[in-house]
Length: 268
Ligand SMILES: [Zn+2]
Image 1: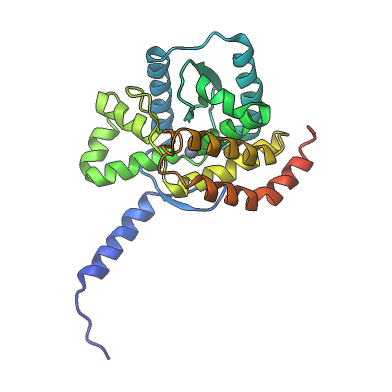
Image 2: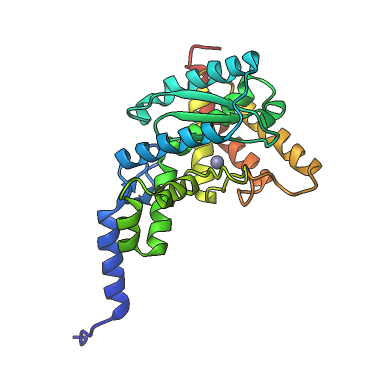
């Protein structure tokens, strides 16, 4: 019989499993286990607060035709995503900006920047973008990021500061977590894992909402072309994301699954 002895590694593993179980969240659409210590209530509160701030800081577009387009497409995506995003009070706002960008926040708040419209080009392209952003919310990627940042900053301090609710540090943390930084007009990238997950869920959403999922591939191809013309420096929407080529390849591999949803969506 082997002599048992105390192993720091085993202890650390056990500790991490304990913390993990207490703070473990399963992404319902993919079954992935994620570390999350932010409650849905806190997440929605932070999302709503962030959206109000962004609306206050950014220039809201008054282009009626473009606003109608993002609402038309947004509402179709929302109808499909609604069961995954409880208590959403959907709102779609078009912001005037050269930046090709879009974001969605917990609570069903969606922002689209005018700079992305020449690349989305049509409702299908718009559905690909809004579907992707809404998928980040459905999978609670913002809360996961906030949790990771809190863990890095020290779990105990993070919980005390991060969840106390009202201070500016909480809001900054939320903006970072949700991938929105208004001061520089830049969007912080989600991790590759989260990006792939949002691509997959978003593709399902757009297909179920009656948009041809092939339009997502076409949109990312146009975006790749846009990036190339920008001189290889990807816009914030994409930086450190999977490379455009690998993203397009992975979307193409997901098309058959999405195609089934599209065929049965009844909106062809
Ligand atoms: Zn994304």
